[in-house]
Image (cartoon, rainbow, N blue to C red):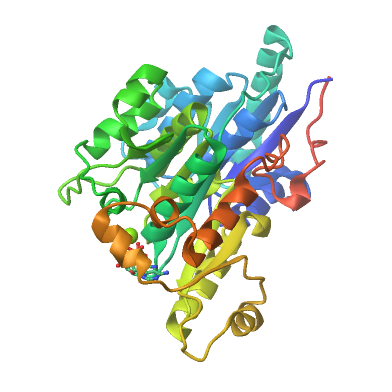
Length: 404
Ligand SMILES: Nc1ncnc2c1ncn2[C@@H]1O[C@H](COP(=O)(O)OP(=O)(O)O)[C@@H](O)[C@H]1O
Ligand SMILES: [Mg+2]
């Protein structure tokens, strides 16, 4: 039997309900993911043969075209339907060339949408029959860990660099540390180095660069540890979400561990990092403002559809005598704290030396806390196929529009 799954792509989540309504099915019979990067992830990670992706008006045009290009290469049995709520700046021919099946104007009512989706299902079904059901099994891939803080100066880069150094040291496997905090990138400083590459050149490695080219663009920072960072350039637009998704997938194909210093704002770039991350470390310092920021960040990220299990809560400078402790944080945030890193003079000392604390002072308490966090990622099983991006309510719900 051939299965199709209709998946609503893009915020707001109510788009899924609107789509289901126009298809005259229950909302949970339509899948939903928050971004094109998450949609691409489903196509690579699941063995469902054909999909129809329906893009919400919030999906930006370059992202939609990038997704179409990806689908043409990696999942050619998938049909894409775009929904717009305004005129389309003459980009319709570009959409068609990219292989988007249909562009629906929402102002024309829901009937047009239903017809378009049904046509797309039929198309996907025909292509599947032609090609057989040889769904490619996902390849071996590395673990992606993002480090995020919505407030600056709390130790995001300190944790990113030391976690990466600990992973490389413990696992002895090739590990990448990627600086995607494009405005404030200081990952390389923690290794006493300066980036030399341009962001554009690094990101374009996502367009199918071979292993040799990837390593030629990396900076060897320590044994088994490779850095990817660009010279900050305020005149250049930060890369878009879809392009960042491709870049990170390229990194995880070439490295066993990829640790990302994610941008400190909820940019498309940061959201793409989260979509592709196996784990997201949220860092805060132990003060009321920091904890509030963390709590708000977690709430925001859960609202856009990221699963709770993906988050790790890290309290940095956790021994500061400031009248707050982990129990307070757990009570306020209603979530367990995963790791506490003490405050230590070794941190600025090692930063000035340009060496990670975990390598320079491996016996210290601060190193020990980060190494213990790293150990939990080493050898931990990857999410099973299909588990990565689907919301719980979508799992096992592939019955919609079954044909065959
Ligand atoms: N556990 C710690 N003990 C002492 N100093 C720390 C600790 N964590 C971070 N710092 C210091 O705080 C400053 C900001 O850390 P950094 O990681 O660069 O912040 P950001 O969150 O902006 O990336 C740095 O000077 C760093 O050395
Ligand atoms: Mg930083």
